[in-house]
Image (cartoon, rainbow, N blue to C red; front, side):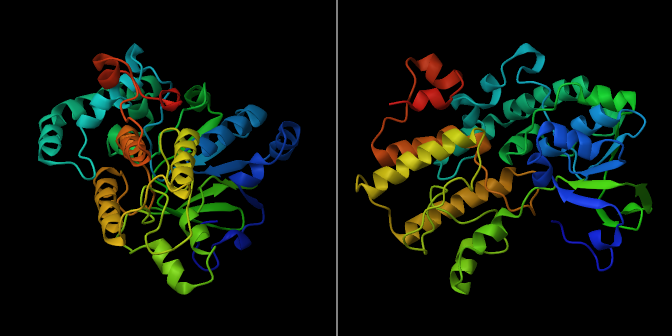
Length: 355
C-alpha cells in the first residue's frame, strides 16, 4: 500500500480501495460481479494494471469507463516481433551484450561497448519506433522520456493486452498521464500537481507493486542484519553476490528477489548454483572480493536503469553475462550453443542450459 499524506489516505474515501493482489485472487465470475456497474480507477501502468483495466472495461464499457492513473509511461510491447524481427536477435543474444558496459569487464570489452554505442542506440530506437507506431503513443501523450534499453535493464517491459489501445480509442479506458502524486477525498481520487484534479470513483484498485525490500528486511529481527540486507541508501539494489548470497549474513541464500527477462529460468539456474555450492563443488571468495563484485553490478544497474531512485535488482540486459559467471563457478562451459554464428547471434533461452 502506498504512503499518503495525513487525512488523504483511503480512510477519507467512502468507496472501496483494494490492492491488485486482492483482485487477482478472485475467480472470473466473482471479479466480474465485483466490478460491474462501478466507476473504477486503476493506479499503475504495468502488467497487472493494464490487465485489470482491460477486464473492468470489458464489464462496464463506455458507460462507466475505467480510469488508469499513470505516473511513468513505459515502453510496453505489443508483441515480440518489432517490424517483423524477433526481439531476441536485438537484445537477447551474446552480441547484443557486447554493446553494454558490463560488471567486471576489462579494457577491451569496455572499449568495444563504447565503440558499439551508436548501434546500441539504433537497436533501442528501432524498437521504440515500432511501439510508438503500433500504440500511437504520441497521440496519447505516452512517449517515455527514457530508452527501451533502460526499460529492459530495469525489468519493466510488459506485454500490452491485445486490444488495450483500441479500448482507449473507444472510450472504455481513460488514461490520466503524469499523476505524480495523489490522495483520496470523500468521492474519489485527488491528483496533485500543477493543477488539482478530482476523479470520481466507487472503486480504486492499486496496481502499484510491492515493497519487496521492506518485506525482505523484516524476515530478520536483528537491526544489524536489516541494515545489511537493505544496503546503503545510494545502492541500486540489495547487495547480493551472484544475486543470491549476502557476504555478511552467514547461512542465508535468497532466490527470486533479483529479476531477469525470464524469472523462472533465472531462479532455476540459481538453485543449481546454490546446490553445487552446498555440495562443496566450489567455494565462495572472500567477503572483500564478493563486495567488490557487488559494487560492480551496482554500478551497472545505476547506469542503465530508467529510474535512478528506484531500488530494484535486475539483470535483464545482461542475463547471458550473468549466467556465464554461474556456469564458470560450477565448472560448466558457458558457451552453450553449437557453432560461432549461433553462439553470438542467436537468442539465448532456458533450453540452452539443459544438461
